[in-house]
Every structure is written in structure tokens, then in C-alpha cells.
Amino acid sequence: MKITFVLPTLCLTGGIRVVSIFAERLRKRGHEVFVISVPHRQASLRQQVKSLLRGRGWIATPENEPSFFDNLDVEHKITDRNRPVEDKDVPDADVIVATWWETAEWVAKLSPSKGAKAYFLQHHEVFDYLPQGRVEATWMLPMHKITISQWLVDLAKTKYGDRQVSLAPPSVDTKQFYACPRNKQSVPTIGMMYSTIYWKGTDIALKAFSLAAEKIPNLRLVAFGVDAPSSELPLPANAEYIIQPDQQKLKDSYSKCDAWLLASRSEGFGLPIIEAMACRTPVISTPAGAAPEILSGGSGILVRPEDPEEMAKAIERICQLPNSEWQAMSEAAYAKVVNYTWEDATAHFEAGLKVAVDKSKQRDVKIVSFSPYYVPEEPERKVPVVSDRKNKVEVGC
Image 1 (tube, one colour):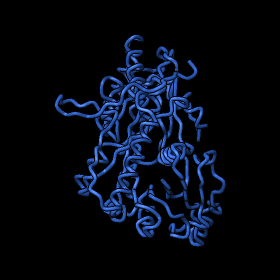
Image 2 (cartoon, rainbow, N blue to C red; image 1 turned 60 degrees about the vertical axis):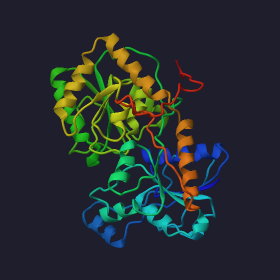
Image 3 (cartoon, rainbow, N blue to C red; image 1 turned 135 degrees about the vertical axis):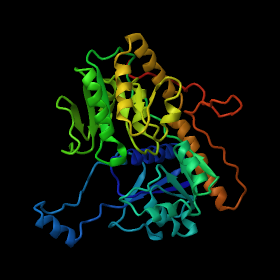
């Protein structure tokens, strides 16, 4: 197939990384892949004047920022300026994929020759800083939806009446994220991703850590994030913090922890969950994104949302486990994620694209949706389970 991905401004977020992985792997499967994105928006004259009057200086437009597409053998074009993508910008193709609510608006207006229209949804982006009505309207556009977690499939069905949604949960690259079997840390250590975005729940995680530290005085925090810590969300004095870490070194942060926190109020999926687990680190998470499916079976601890006290108790519980019990939880976390590969994920994504093409030809299509991380509680409910990982290799052990 000829496949076009339409992206917004590129940045080092998990969502963009997922698209880059799918794009590269689809190309390796023999598809012709083209990617288009838009540059950063330049500040208006009014915004520049305000910034100068407030003593913040001239607002520079970021240029030559690193991108997950930098070293990929995938054709990538950036438009001349920050504007909607139009017919003239993209080649004719079999399928064209919107990857963000705004790009969905653009793709909806493109001519049929640009391909069957698909919408890759990685979150329900009805945030205060976005135009909620427009975001919700994109869910009702006549495009085939492909998404990454079961809760988004269910949301499309219950809120937007779309019963034909493909599910392609992301995997984790075990050549990038790995750790050898290990013992608990000599100094109890908890990890987290730091963000000032409200729905990421950094305030909850930091409160939970401070409460746990009252019971475990030598408790240490390891964290990484995109920006410098805010004075409104200060890190503990002894925290180890890395700004914009080298992607190949993220495993070092994960693997030096006894547990990893995800306190999000909302997530599309929650990539740090499976990245930490691939590094044999148990996860303590709120029921955001795919956490309820992934943390079943003793591979982590699920806590109530907006409850730092319960999260603190989970920290204490893991840190106080005998080493043998912690190792059992560590191995359960690892086993949970390594049997489902990016090759499996790409196969599901590819199947979703084929459904989009078939639907554009007005064929009757039956959609089968499942989460490879989910183990059903009811015996009669049949959910496909991915078999043991092919060619399993533990790198670096």
C-alpha cells in the first residue's frame, strides 16, 4: 500500500514516537510510506510585544529540534509554514492517516485520490487548553478509527456511536528497554516521569513520594522530563533528575528503581508503564490508559485516582517486600510485556489500514478488537492471547 501519515509539529512525545515506529515498520513490510508535518508556529507581533513588555525577551521559533524521524529511512516533508495540509502537499495514496485532532480536520478535506481516510487516536484530547467542541467533532468524522487502548475503543462506541474501531496497542522495544534480573536497590528508589501538564498527575506522585518518605527516611527519587522542574512542583532535594534524556539511556533510569509511578489523571495508553516493566521494574499506577489491563496478574499495583495516600502505601509495600518477593513481582512485570512485540502491533495497525481501504470501497467489514495485555475474568469471554514472543532475546544480560 501507499500510506501517508499527517502529523502536527514534531516533538519528543510518546505519541509521535509511536507513529514513527509504525511508519518505519510499515515501510519494512514493503509499504510505500510518506510522512508530512508542519513547522512550529511563529509568534505573532502582538505576542512578541507582550513578551518584551513583560521582560521575557523575544520569542524564538524553535528550529532543528531533534525528532524521532531524524534517522528513519522514511520520506518526510515539512510544509513551508504552519498551516493546514492540502492536496498539493501530499501524494496520491491508498490510505492517509490523521494523527491528531487538528490533522483530522485537514485530512477530512482532502480529495479521495489522497487515499482512504483513517484516524489514529492515541488519546481523548478534550483538554481545557484545546477547543473541546472541535476535538469531539473529529471523532464523528467519516474516517476509520485505529486506537491504542481498550478504553478508547469503548469510548468511541459509547460516546460517539462508532462500533467499528481497530485496536493496535503499542509494544516496547526490548533492544532499547531492558535490564538483567536483579535484586532490590540497596537504597529504596522510586521513579517517575516529571511533567507540569495537569493531567499527568505529577502533583499526586510527588505527594505520594513525600508521604512514603516519612515512613522510609532514605527513600530516593529518580525522574526525567522534557523541561526544568517548576517552582510550583518542586522535586525533593535529593532527587536525581534528567532533562530531555538520551532515548537510549532511558532504560538506566527505569532499571535503577524498585517501582515506577504513573499518577496520571488521564492517559491514552501510558507508555512508561510498559517501558518500566520491560526493565523489570514493577509499576504503581492509577487506572489511566491501559494500566488496568497491563497491571493485572501481579505485575504491579493499581491504586485509586487522585489518592496520593493510597499510592504512598503502595510505595511502602513494594519497598518493604522481601527481596525474593520483589524479584517475583519484577519478573512478572517483565513477562507481562515481552510476549507482545512491535511486529505484532504493526500487524494490527496494518490490518486497521486495510479496513479503512475496504470501508472506503463500501464493503461490509467485521472488526475484531482485543487487547493483548488483557486477561479476562469471566471464563466464557474469549480474548485472543498472543503466544510466546518469537526469537526472544534478552539484550545485555
